Structure formats: structure tokens, C-alpha cells
Image (cartoon, rainbow, N blue to C red; front, side, top):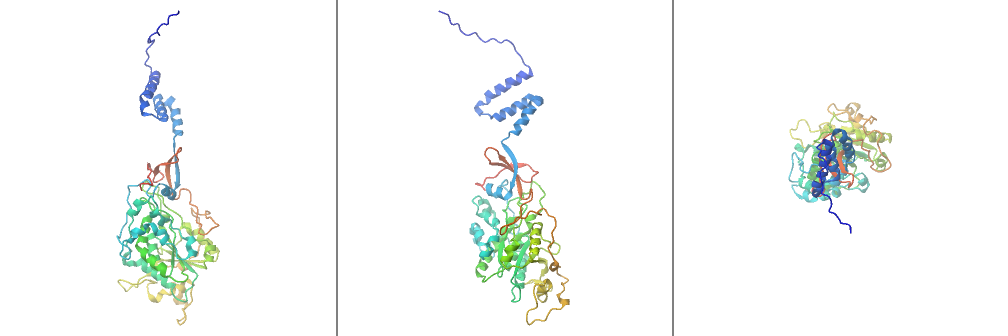
Length: 449
């Protein structure tokens, strides 16, 4: 019977402390020590690459970085907000409301209960105008992830002496006479809160069609929360007049001129810019509209914004007459310290010279015919009646989409987009970068916003 001998004991044959062997020994020991902590394979490989030094580890490190689970992309800002929450990336930042009001125009606080119904309540009264209504901004408070937005919103007090509403009333009065043409639509393209207030002054005779296609953000390039605040203030007025108008009311398209606000690519800005979507020439013709009055801020800023240039040229080519009138052409009488009315040219006697100046109206029966001298542009008003659309190169050139009602433009590369970091494996957004050249911060959560 063969005797089974015990195994030979382990004897050290040599002892070495060279750099290459020490690195290998450290590698094995680190794996053993880290096992309870479930060190990831990627982290372990990264540690090895750092240990091997520049020569051996450089290639491994480059390979590791190329295999990262995260990738940087850009995505549409509105899509990102709808997915991750209105204040994505900056959940702790606050909205600021200069001249905030706790109550609406009626002195009530019912506006807070109406935050989830704005898109429905502020829709055009006429079904024929519904396809051109863009309620995106009004949908933001109703989103399930917008609890903090609802808590932050508040009405915005009107401009001093209620001047914007009075200017709206002055525009409405121009169209109130029996001799005024019924084939005119108005486009309000001034700052959002001003557009809303002017529309409120026009609402007794015009059907407001809001074209507001973004969401607010604490660092938004477009301060659309202020437009929401103005809407909350005038909401009761819009609601009353919506139900009291009879017959066919001409549309007033309500835009926010801040939609193309300057973006400087800073970390302190969230690019929530957007382009306006107006009806096509065929759409306007089907509504019986042959004339468009474009309301700009003042004489120094009368040209249509770049995203409307192709639209206006298309209107011209379809024989739709487009003219401009800045709000500054509507003035209070000079002799009144506190005016209760605004007029074209600053006086009741010059107010109805608007129609002769713009060539859209003849003298009413019983009034003396206007001579060429009195019909010439008044010295205190703009030459907006001489405006004619002309094509010019813009970042929106050749980007118009056709074929449907209210189709707008494609956004240029980088316009209204935000850089995000996403997981390759899960598709989830892990970080958001405000300002495409800035640093990444943690993404928000739609469930907590």
C-alpha cells in the first residue's frame, strides 16, 4: 500500500519589490478588499489604468472613456421640460415677478383655482380660429409635475395708468364704425405682458388667439412667466367678453416679442426661445381676411421679427395687404395730465385719419372728404402705412413648413435647445447644462417639481 504523504509546505523561492510586480500585487489585493463593496468593473479598470502609468495606462484609459455609459446630447427645451419638469436642472431657483399682484382685475383670488383650466378658458370663442391657437404656455401649470410652478405664479399688475389696455381700446375703436372694413386681422407683437393687456382692451370687439409656444423656466431666456402673470390678471375680463361678443369678431393674434430674445450662451440662461406659428395665406383667405395690421412696439422697432419675415412675404404674394402700426402712434391728448383715452396721432380729431393714411377706408357719410393735405402722414406718427414686406436673409430662411393650418418654422440648429447628459443603458437624463458652454448640474425630477 502506497503511503500518502502530506503536501509539501509552501516555501518562498524569491522576494521581489520591483515596480511592475508591486502594481500587479496591488491590483489583486484591491479586488479582494473591494469585493464586499461590489466595486464596478469599470472603476476597477480605471484604477488599473492609473496605476500602470502614462505609457501602459493611456490606451486603457482612452478606451474606458469611450465606453462611458453616459453621452452628451442636445434636445428641444420644451420636450426636456415636459419630460423632466418645468424647472429642470434648477429646481431651487425662484421666479421673479416685478409689480406682482395678489388679486386679479376683479379684485379676486379665484385665479389660483383656474391654473389647470387656462388652456380651455382662453381658447378662441370661434371654432374657425381654434386651429391657430397655440396654448403651450397655458398648459404648463396644468402639468402633473408643475406643482411648484403653480405655487410660484401670481398675477402681474397693469402698466401705469392702464396705458396698454387703453391703447387696445383705441385700436378697437378704429374698427367699431360701420364704414370700417371687416376683412382685417391684427397681429400684436410686443412684449408678452403688454400684448396680453392690449388684447384685453381689444377683446370687446376682437377674438384673441394666443400664440405662446413655450414653458417658463427660472433661468429662461424668454420670461414667459410674466406673460402668464398678465393673463392671470386679465383672465376674468377675457372670460366675460368671450361670452358677450356676438356675430363674427375679427381675430387678434397675441404674440410675445421676447420669443427671439438674445441668447448669449451663458450658464445663467435656459434657452426656451421659440418661433411664432401664424396661419398660412390660404388659411387667412378662408377666414375672409385680406388685410393685416401688425402692431410693433415703437417707431424705432417696427420691422417684423425674423421668424415672421417669410410669412409676411407669403402674405404679400397672396395679395394680403400687410401694414405696420407701432403702439407709440397711439397717444393721450397732450393737454391732459391724466388721460382717459388714447388716440391715433394723440387727439380725437386725428384718430380717424388712420384709415385715410393707411388707404383702407374712405370718409364716412356726412363727413367732409379728406383732402390730400390732411390725409398725409401726421408728423407725430410713424410711416408704418408705407411698410411693404420684403424678403431678407434670416436664420429662419428656407425653413418654412407647408401643408397644414398654422404650420410654423423649423427651429435652426441650436435654437431653443439644451445640452443634457443621458445614460446609454437606460435613456434617463442624469444632468442638464444651462448654457451650452457651461458645466453640467443634476437633472431635476418631474415628480418633485
